[in-house]
Length: 482
Image 1 (cartoon, one colour):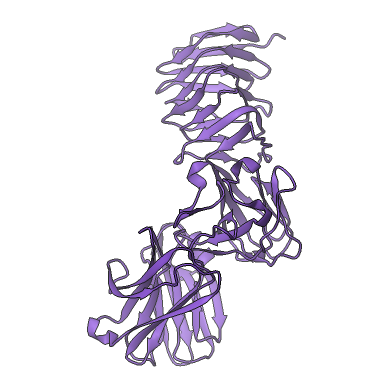
Image 2 (cartoon, one colour):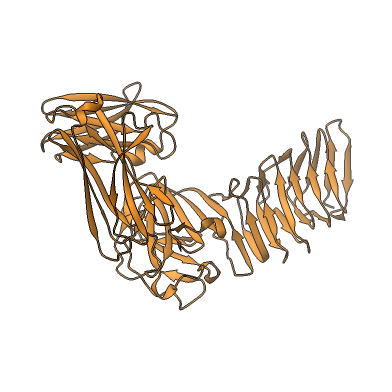
């Protein structure tokens, strides 16, 4: 039986064409559907525009030499072998206002392809020739059924590409987009975004990272050994005989050394960072690489704030510093608007650890039960970054303090901190508005940080309740997710 592709108008008119056909270019306008049947082949040397109200369904093969613009609907193919090939000889683009859903995608264009609209791939992404430049706001999404794409220096992805959420739990993972993990404690469901190219470079105080970073989110908090690989083209001039891993937590303004040691990764391309015996660490966060001669300037390894009599005492330490000028200690009555409480001079440049402290005197004068503090670290060139926010209870030192910041929250969720006046049994329970228990935490520690970070990050918009109970008292805090 001869196979066809069809151009079907909503009026009922159908146009059947041979299984192999060529069209120089095509614009679909209005209520029309362009359907390429399974086994069909359409070669289009120039552009294809899917206008508003029009539909493209490709269950066969479409070879495109020009731009694909989608302002209508590009439906997810039903045929596992459905293929779009970008085979132009001049620069091509995939653009428009609507998502492009693909099964398999092949890029074979030495001049490259620019992607500036949302697109997802359910099958195989084959990179034969040319760079795929992806706009920052429209990452290419590889769906759970997509295998890891193979990249080379001359055929690779530049910009953000995301792996849709996949259940990993305690099994080994990868490699996928340059990340792999041996089996270990459960991380639940993993979402991964890798960014490469100029927008991936972290530059602070004149020092720069490699031109690649990985950002992961998980639904469980198991620690794993993290291994990475990247193309040598992304070294960005760093000394990869001592590739040094760095990690950062949202909002990604402060970088600290990751758990793994510096290692020589120059033995191959792609680079492979998998030092034997590297320590396990939290998977969630952002990771990149630099080298010891050009560290990301201030490695803030800890920052704590607490009551000390009538005052608030802040302590922080750094693992190393590069061209650091000073720390501004900033105070807020509401966790939103901050003012400078004081300034502490920094070491400048040092590869040794250093401790800092600051005392904010007589904090009851500010007339609020809780104050919020953060550090603004400023380099000698005027650039700076902010630490996480830490709350301090102004009320009696015998009180139970339960804080969540920010609240309402979105994205990564609030930073929840519980402080009791002395060590003893404590239970924290997270419920929805109907009282259904979502998570529970028990401890005897006096201070607990980042409670339910993974659980709150996964919550839908709505109102939730955090109940904290000790031997002497109980508090309920309303949490709002936007």
